Amino acid sequence: MRADAAWYVAPAMNEQRFVVMGAGEVGYHLAETLSRDGHSVTVIELREDRRLRIDGELDVAVVGGNGAHVPVLETARVDKCDLFLAVSSDDEANLAAALLAKQMGASRAAVRVAAAEEVIGHRQVYEETFAVDLLLSTQLLTTTRVLNLIRGHNTMAVEYFASGKVQLRKISVEEGSLLTRQPLRELELPPASLVVGIFHGDELTIPGGDDRAQAGDEALVLASTEVIAQVERMLTPRPEVLGTVIIAGGGATGETVAHALETVEVDVKIVERDRIRAEKLATLFPAYEVLQADATDVSLFQAERFAKAGSFVALTGNDETNLMASLLARDAGIPLVAPLVQRAKSFELWRRLGLEHLFSPRILAYERISEYVHSGYSSNIVSLSHGDALVVERRLHAASPAAGVTLAEMNPPRGLIVGAVARGRKVFVPRGPDKLEAGDLVILFVRKEELGTVQLLFPGRDDR
Image (cartoon, rainbow, N blue to C red; front, side, top):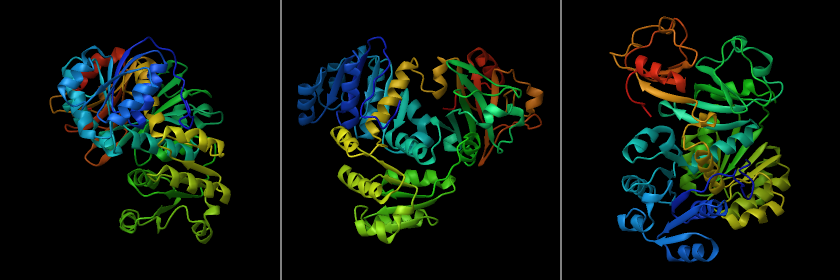
C-alpha cells in the first residue's frame, strides 16, 4: 500500500463495529473509509461544525460531546464495538477515553498520540496504564515513511524495543541482496544485529545458518538502533546515494526526521522561518546547517544552491507553504521532492500539479489501523504470520533459569531466538559463550509453540 496515494482500498473483511473519537483529518478519513468498506461506524465529536460535516457527508452515526465522558461513551455504545479509535488531537483525552471505553466493554482500543517519543520510549507504560491495545504516533509513522523515501530502501514496518535502543524492521528482499546470495552464517553483519525471521508469502521461517532468502521475501531484522541503518544498507542491493537532504520546517516532525537522519551518512540542511526555533535547532544539531529563512523564498534556493540537493522534504505545519516550497524544489531540479499534506481535499490538486511523493498522516494512520484489524488485532509487526510468532521483552530476574548461564548452556530450541540483550546502555546480540545476567532486558523472537519454553526460561510478564 502506498501512503502517498490519495485513497486506500482495504482488503475485504467481515463487517465490524467501530467507534471513532475525533473527527479531524485522521478521524474523518478513518470514518469515511471504514464506512465505505461496509462497517458500522459511530463518530464522537465535540465541535458542532465537524459534526454537521460528518452528518452531511458520511453514512455514519454521530454523537456530540467529549469522548472522555462516560455518558457520551454510553450513547456511542462503546460496549458493543470491536475497536474504539481515539484519534482526536488531545493526547490526554484519547488515553482517558480509551481506558473508560475498555472498562465499559469495548473489545479493543487504539490510541493516537502526537509525539514519536511516546511510542518509542513509553509505549509499555501507556498500554498498561490506559488499557491501550495499539498505540500509534502519526509523527513516527510519517518519519518512517520519509526515511524510506529519502533512502530508497524497502523497510515496510518498524517496531521499537528497550525504550528505543533496539529496532525490529521488516525489509523487502530484492534480487541481488546479500540475503539471496549468501547463507546467513556467511553474512558479516555489524555487531548487535541479527536476521530473526524470513517471510515467504504468509509462511514464516525462523532461519538457521544455512538458510537464505529469495527475492520477494520479507526479512525481519533485529538490531540496535545505532547500527540498524548500516544493516539495512548492506541488505539493500541498490547503492545509497543520498546527496544533501533539505528539511523545510523545523517543527516537531521535522526535528524527529532530523534526529532519525543522524544515523545516516548524509548532509542535512534545515530551513526554519522562526528565529528562536532555528536557534534551538542549531543547538540540537551542531552537525547540520540550520537556515533561518522562508522555504518559499526563490532567492534562498539560488543563494544556498538547493538545486544540488538529493532530497527536499516539506514538513511545515502549513499545507500551502509545503506546496509552494515543493513546487520550487521541483522546478529547481531536486530529484526527490516529498511534501506532507494534512488536508484531504488538497491531495488530488497537488498530484495534478506533478508532485508524486505525497504523504499524509491520515492515510498512514489508516494503513496502520487497517493492518492491525486485518492481522486479527495483533499490534506486533510480525502478525502477518497470523500470530504464529511474537516478539517478547522480558526482564531477567535472579531466580530465572536463564540468569547466570551462557546461551550455549541454555540451548534454546530453534523456535526461540534470544535476539538482543539490553544491559544498561549496552545492547548486544548474545552468542554461544555470552552469559545472561539478572537485570538484563532480553528481546525474544519466538514461535507460538515455544511460548511455554519462554515462560520456563524467562518467567514473568512481558516487559512491553
